[in-house]
Image 1 (tube, rainbow, N blue to C red):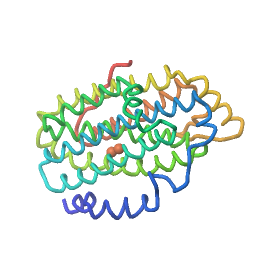
Image 2 (tube, rainbow, N blue to C red):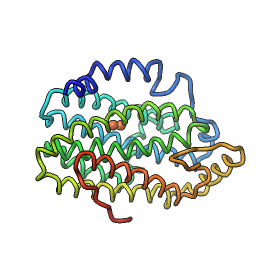
Image 3 (tube, rainbow, N blue to C red):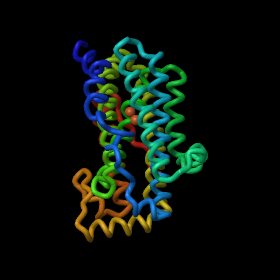
Length: 294
Ligand SMILES: [Fe+2]
Ligand SMILES: [Fe+2]
């Protein structure tokens, strides 16, 4: 427990996050960095960037509601303190991704409307499954749904976006690298804290397994919309062709994303996230349930 206390303490959070990788940043990136001009100038790609950033905002709003809601459900002080740090991380994530919407040219007065318009209905359902557990103050299911399922998803999506952005959009890649470091800490907490609670409450397992299966289904349906049914598909393929021509790589789990079709990218992402779920759930004694294929 001593290690657990120091690893997830506020002191550790201060030293490893605000006083370390976020030091000197502005909305998560280096001061003065901007979105690339050719992205801003291309209406189809700009709309695609707005649409995908809205999904990040929607996911982070769910994470903020879940992490703050779970504070009062947590059975011990160390978990409450950790969740308080996570609450600030998630609020920051909302802020940096909302700032990106403004940087992409969304007028401030249109923010809410833009988020409503582009929010993927499957992602909204994904969030509702989790927030229903949080509303019932169900700490065990809430932590599994948030710190393993939601954050496992966020982590892998951010890594994929970062791989594509490293060369093409350093500003966005820098914003993502800070959020990835945060999500890594959140996922670690979920695994470390919840394993012992599951052991104490084996009767909760089947309900949690059902939740994971349901959330995973909505996640896969969101991926299908983002890759297979993306209205900007042609323009994105054009960008990838440009990357290949100029030798720009986007390495992600052994693949060069610039060389993959949207369907192949979707399956690499889905396989990566589901494999992670299986490993992490296995470690806490939950049996991974294969979701239906959307
Ligand atoms: Fe987050
Ligand atoms: Fe998180």
